[in-house]
Every structure is written in C-alpha cells, then in structure tokens.
Length: 231
Image (cartoon, rainbow, N blue to C red; front, side):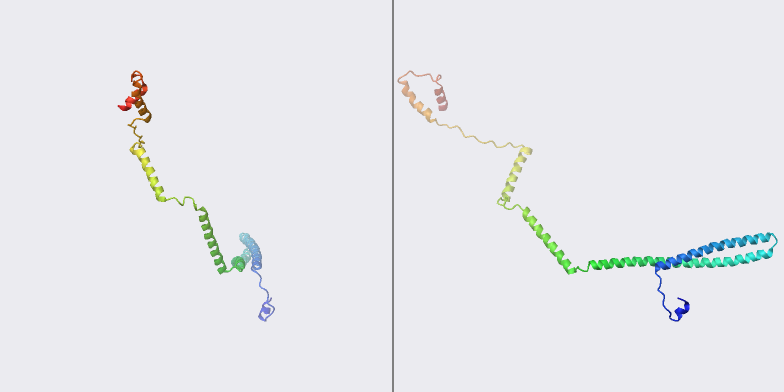
C-alpha cells in the first residue's frame, strides 16, 4: 500500500509473518552486499585512474577520478550503515521468531497438560491414594497373620524353656571350662542276708551228716559260697 493510501484510510495490508520478514531482510542484505562489492571495485578503479593520470601530468582527469572515488566511498559508507541496521533488525526478528516458537510450544504443552487433567479430580485422587494405603495395610496384616505360627508351640512355657537352657549352658560350662566330672549313677548295695535257696541248703546240711560222712567244705563250691556270705 502506498503512503497516500495509508494516510487516507485505504485498504490495510496484512503484516507479514516473522519468517517472511526475515526472508525479505536476508534478500535485501544479500543485494546490498553485492552493491558493496561493486562499489569497492569501482573505488579501486578510480583510485588507479587517479594514480595513472597523476604520473602523466593529466591533473584534471586525476581530480575527476578522485571526486568520483569520494562519491563512491560515501555511498559505500551509507551501504555499510544500512547493512548494520538490517543485520540488527534481522537478528531481532530471528530472536522474536525463536521466542514465538518457544512460546507456541509451551502453550501447546500447557493445553495438553490441561486436557490430561481435565478428567482428574484432586479430591478423587486423594481418596484413591487413601484406598491404596488402606489396602496396603490390610495386605500387611494378612501377611503377618499368615506368617504367625498359630498353635505351634503356643502351650510351651517360655520360663521353663529358659530354665532348661540355662541348665544346659551351665552343664556345658562345667564340662569345658571347669572340668567337673559328670555325676556317676550309684549302684544298690549288695544284700547282707542269705538268699532263700542258700538258707534251705544250710537247714538240710545237718541232716545229711547223720547219714553220710561229713564232706570237706573246701571241696564243695556251694559251701564255699555259703561260708563267704556267712563271714
């Protein structure tokens, strides 16, 4: 749109996007760089012309070449300033374009997160976590109940077991450290009275002396045993 169109309310132009603006700036920058290279070459030519004519005593041609060189240098200086401005503007647009892309991505991520949380209720989440914790407690109680040895050794008295264990430990201590011998079981004493069979034989012995000659007690083993018991 022309300047007058803007002044008198003509049709408004649609602003280009940052990408389009960056592309146009790059095209302009390239065009100015080519113009800059052309001016530098022309300045070099005019400088060479001035040198050539100065050595041949053609002062007028040399002065004209120098004047032209000055005009070209001024144009080159303007182009340098324009290039600097365009470069800064292009960098600002590129930064803005990057920021726009970042913000767009962040907005999309926020919308996606909002959509993901749309069907979630904080109170329901807390209730669900409470149910999970409750079920974990129930599972723990069930595990403890299963692992508890019910009715296995419940009738045993811990005090009796401890007492018996102390006795065993003391007994082992006596054996290994002190060296006290184990108590030997006592045998019953031998009876001092005559056995019933031997007493009957003693009663029969005097009657036998009336019919037979007395026998030598040293030759009879039964008599030896009776005499040993009697003595």
